[in-house]
Length: 275
Image 1 (cartoon, one colour):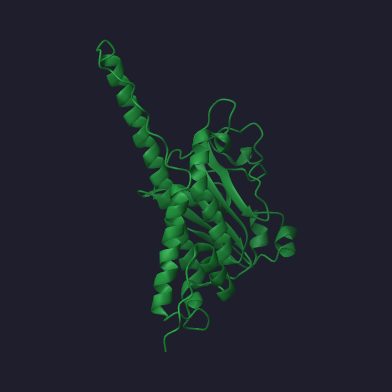
Image 2: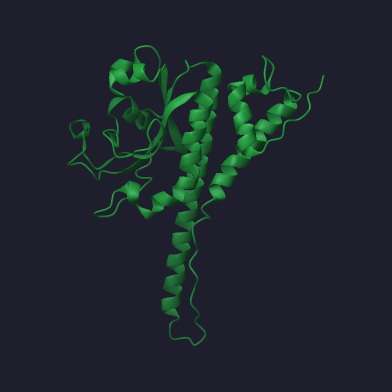
């Protein structure tokens, strides 16, 4: 599966994680990493997106980077830390397990022995009770644009794998929609400006209003609506049952307490159980 050239940009003196376009992605990025924590009993969830090589001189992984023209940019983090300026702020494409995901287009998973993979300080795993690690490709239109990674307190099982894969697909779709909107808006503005210049001598030329980015909450509401609908459909299927082997929590691969928390946050009503 091919990887995209860049998904985030940088400008001279300003890295990609401080670029104005990055703020437009926040309504998707923050719910994405937070939901990954919730569903996986996560300790740390992070998103890297492909961008240009912009911090090569100070990058701790510079020696592992082949051409230093592009890399994975740490763009969102939730859980044990929200910082995105640490030693893993950039991953060379093709380097280590996270950096290889955009190349292979396949998830990377690790359980026992993950301390030896160079993902973090070995003592850190024991201190925080981390039992598994997943790095999933974020794919838009058949191209990898980045990686969603989760350090989890749970062992990986089929239900958790399906849940994380679905979440990565949903997040990538939302990110791609925002990027597509920006590109359409920019193209329209360029056409409008060129047209206005060509007609600048005409008396009836009026200023053309630029197309704005989506409202900051729009993608967030879309992501929440999809999650709310999914929970409601599962509850309907289970007759309102949340706990137990045939309950909605088991179907979704969540703890009942986690599902109750998500239902409360999303405003999903608790329906009466049917026999």
